[in-house]
Image 1 (cartoon, rainbow, N blue to C red):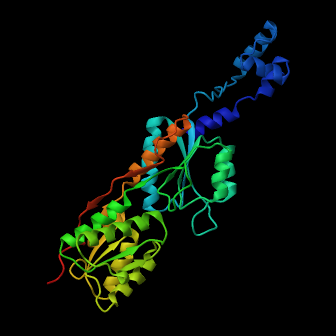
Image 2: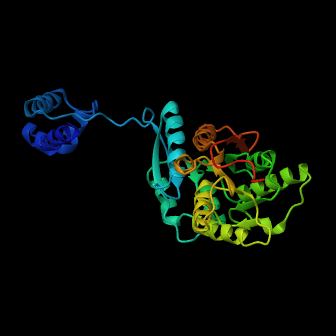
Image 3: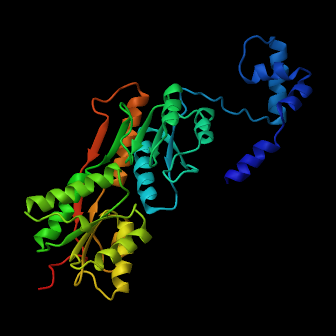
Length: 347
């Protein structure tokens, strides 16, 4: 139906045809179409009759004041379930606010996920009122570019702490790490390891700090060999789990700082002929759909991704309206979702 309507409009007479039919210039015909007053009555009559006779379709005038404001959501990839949850939350909040959202996956040349400058230039070209970034980080020059062009923006779950004054929304990662580890300790595990994400990243460091705090509160000695980093990579997590299993005294439980990495842990355990949770209890982090699909279903810490995106969109809207928040960092609570991947250790 849309294609048919567009074709009929395109096939209709142009303004040049109307002008020729009425015996006037194209600018004069344009004045009549747009309701301008500086046209003689007789000329206006001839043009109007030509418009009606030829069936010219008057297109509605664009009113910028009435047009919905446009915001950009920039993600690493459109293929992951993580991005899908972020998109869902941002889209719902934008709909409620009467905003339009343009979603794009930033092309990157570096492993940290910084978008290329050419993409940023497109923001001005399409008239975006603001940007939500769900990227690892931005460079100093990109922050400066956004400031120079006065484009409001909000970071969703930034990997590194953003510059002072930059608004960001994340999750209570320290509390999530604490809760995950306490769950394993309460089941009776004393040899609990952690497979963390990338070193020196906010979320990973906070989750490991929560893990260590839970051990300290339980009076259990922290073992440096039980802390491994896998950079949020499934294959690397697989290797780190094999390293833990090769220790003289391997753990009986492991807190894995992302659901995707937990899948790599599952694979490593299966290769060694070990079962979850009989031989090894596993707790993940995120509560992505993969956590429910795993076998056995993964106990994990739910990170409210859709809610984080919705909160970021509402924060962006306030920035667009000229309001500056009292606090630039918002953290949403996490909670443990118990499934079948954890149990008491073997006697």
